[in-house]
Image 1 (cartoon, rainbow, N blue to C red):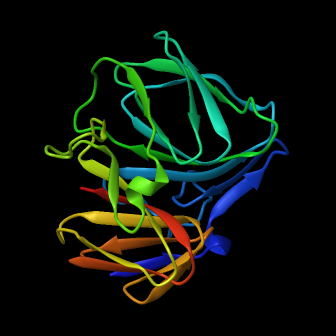
Image 2 (image 1 turned 90 degrees about the vertical axis):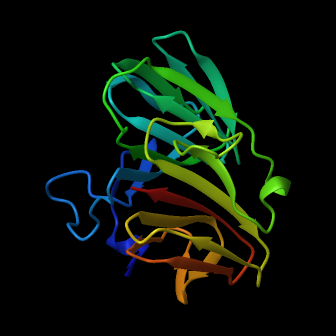
Length: 232
């Protein structure tokens, strides 16, 4: 089953410095149709104004993956990590037993990012953070795994969840296939352009959930880039 989540069905808000859309329900008065998918519980599409960001705040027992769409995010945390992740690249934070962190836009242009939260396989563990470059030429016309908690996923950033996060950059008309076990779930959102997923059109701002599907055929209807999460 495919469930299209058009942008107008997503919850969100505008705080001035932060414009947010929530692909998954995050409050009791949100859209109940946009429920979580197994370990995948949050997918926020955020735009953060220059010079603004999230101050120090805590997390525990959560795997948080940030894909930067435009601009760059600066990260600082309570275990001594400081870093900057630029457009097209990914950072991962395993909150483990507990961590506080801040994220901000130190640039002159709006920062746009996807932030994805996954429940870990098991609670606890040592908090950690990492970032990695993923040049677009490496995912041109094909899917590349950015972060994964599944054995055998090579050089992807490691996470503690039974999930993988993938990306592809496609020219108009290009097609990629992704096999998924029907016991697992998947969610896809374009970061640029538009694609069809098994014939259903998904444009920037939209998302689509795949439940009990065996195969996803993803075709770019215009030059596009998308993120795909496969989670138990």
